[in-house]
Image (cartoon, rainbow, N blue to C red; front, side):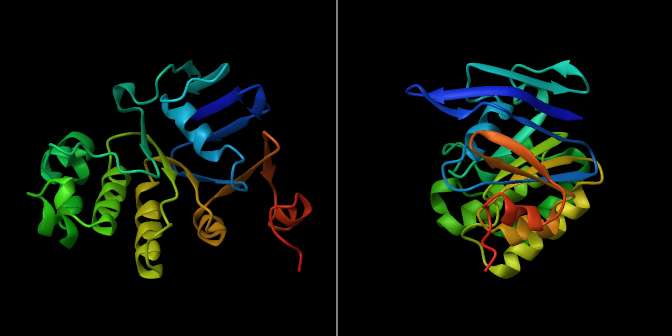
Length: 216
C-alpha cells in the first residue's frame, strides 16, 4: 500500500495542505477531487518526490519513501509534457514501459506511427496521448495521474478508463481531474481535498454536502 500522511505545505505563509491522508493499493483506483487551487497537483508532486513540503510521511508497505520516483516505485503523469526532447518515443518507452506489457503497448497505432520520432515532431494532442499511455503501462507499482481526461476526446477518455481498469489488477492508482464524472466512474474510492484537508467520501451526496458539487 502507498500512503501519504501528515503532509504540511505552505507558500508565502499561506497554508496549502495541512491535514492530509490518502492511500491506494494494488487493484484499487483512488480518485482525488477538489476545486481549482486546492492543492491536488501539489499533493501528487509531493508523493512523487518533486516538491518538498515542510513535512510529509510517504510510505510503501510501511516503509518510508523519500523520493517516490527512485527505484520505479511511483510513476507520475504531470499536466505538462515530461518526455526528454532529445530521445525518440521508442527510447523513452524502453525506459518507462513494463517489459511484460511491451507488446501490448507497442501494438497501439499511435506508437506505431511515431515510435521513431522525437516529442517535438508530434502535435500536442498526439504527444499527450503517448505520454499518458507510457505512464499507464509503466513499470511502477503505483501510478499518479494529473488531468488524464483533460484535452482528450470522449472516445479517448473511455480508452484511458479501460486501460486503467485493466492495469489496476497489479497497480495502485491515484487520479485527479476536473472532469469529476470520469473520476467517479473509474474510481473505487473518492477523496475530497478542501481547505487543505482530505475527506474520504462515502457517497456522492457528500460532494454536495462539502460544497464540491452544486445541489441544483
